[in-house]
Image (cartoon, rainbow, N blue to C red; front, side):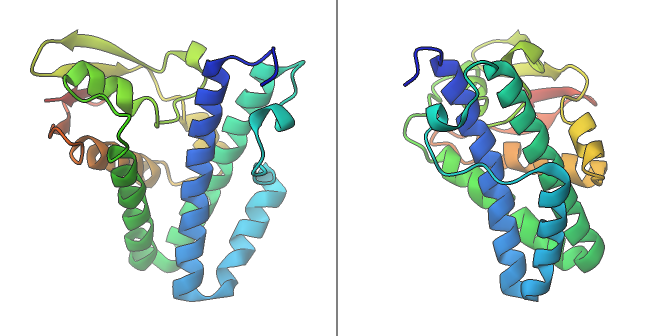
Length: 209
């Protein structure tokens, strides 16, 4: 690994790739259902928001002279492109597309929940494990923070919406995309080896019990 890269850079890069993988899987299931006509949406999105990240080690891809900027740009690209594709599919295919995308969000979340590296012996550790997968901007953005915790639950607050500007850049259906994101979190939390519940307590305050 480059001497300029730290574990946090790889951690963030893995989360970016996970978001890209979800997007790719959603495209695939739409191709399986509706045929190759759906590729036109993906092609439009690539032209507008950038190519997919190549399947190479981070040190072979990143600009070591601008590590923060490179990672930030990849977050913008993947969230904008995904927002465009997922929303366009929903516009075109309605409830059938929603069914397909919903299933892929749940499927990936459950796969991540089954990762043996997750620490789930306390609500606090569930929150930490969740943030090993959920892409919430750059670490310095501090998009969420714990506001209350004990042995039974964790309450964490989302400060504004770190995704909104990227979803809007991708002409995304905001309510739909937020719904899918919440589904991912709920599916992850409620399919861990130790069972927890996930609920929204208020508009931007979330609860793990």
